Amino acid sequence: MDFNIFTTPLLGIVAGFIAGKIMPGDEPGGIWGTLAFGIVGSFIGKFAFGKIGLYEDSMIMGIIASIAGACLVIFIWKKFIGPMIGGGNTPAA
Image (cartoon, rainbow, N blue to C red; front, side):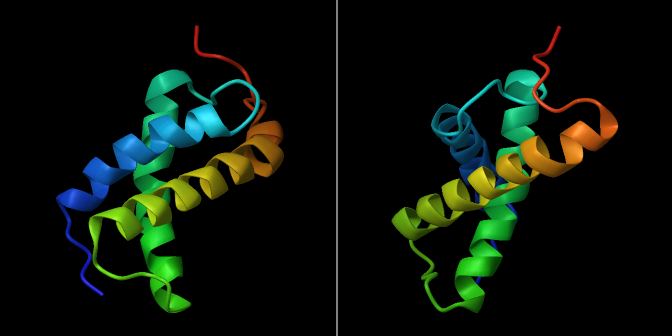
């Protein structure tokens, strides 16, 4: 499993944008927050898919793993972390 330090964040930006459209409700932190969640989710998704044997180092699997990871990060933020710190689904000002 090869984690390319340059392509994973780029995929994460795309994945964050797509995940922000897939997940219901307001985007936490606005567009910048969603893109940041996408980058984090990209690394998490590639790692998780690799551990269960679903990740091959290809562009399409990278995008799928990144989107799944970004959706997971956004879900966790909206349901658990955001409400604890008082910033659950508040849109950016």
